[in-house]
Image (cartoon, rainbow, N blue to C red):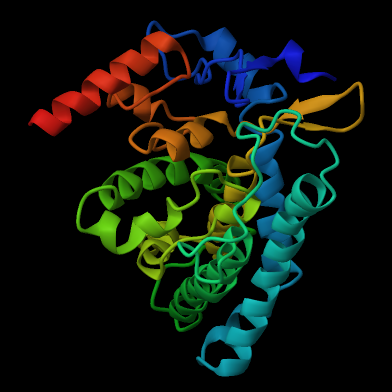
Length: 331
């Protein structure tokens, strides 16, 4: 499956897809209910491939890999280490799979890779001189650590009856609906905190660390400053204000913890073989890393379109973005 069928290379060798960044036909006017329903149940669509995958991993993480809720009633190093180990394994397997195939094995070389260069391995801007090593360090020592702290403390509240828990047998419909809405909440939360940390001084203090990855790879996804990780994983705090099940917390954190991997892979498509490839929907966020002030959400909700921060990859859209940034500098 050759990349020429899906895009082309510019004079510098950068891959440019033919497709444009777009949104599903669900939040549009005039409404298109038939198209919306088709998208929800199609592949790719709302449920598949990503949404149900992260929900499924989250449910396995809670119901199979986590201790019972009552074990969280007392904070202790043993519980924390168990949670940290569980989350670390999930990240290692998932991020490691993308990294191994695309960057270690280089199974498709630079086919569908946006930037033809590989991650920087000798630069003083990174802590260990290596983009990959720096990103892995931040992912585990800050990202998974703070993710695990949120998980432990919220479940401690739940185990000590400080919040309103639901009974799964009595509230199955509510349980399923809330799980399926997590993706929308994550889109909204990410856009809001992402816009916030792009303003000084938060950008200088925190988000600048993530944007060292101009040419991102899978491990760039959770490579953030601890301040940004606190903002990022705060998405799980929503459920303290609603009747909730512990699985909501785990699924939300798993979604936040794992979903950055494909979005930062640096490739538009992954080749299964010479005849088959599939889109991992990473173009919008790659453009954010390349141009910084666009595509803050790149999710299902068309927030960038609504707030004028969309860059869809076209020349017309580029000119609009440049005019917007020039106006912001003047103001």
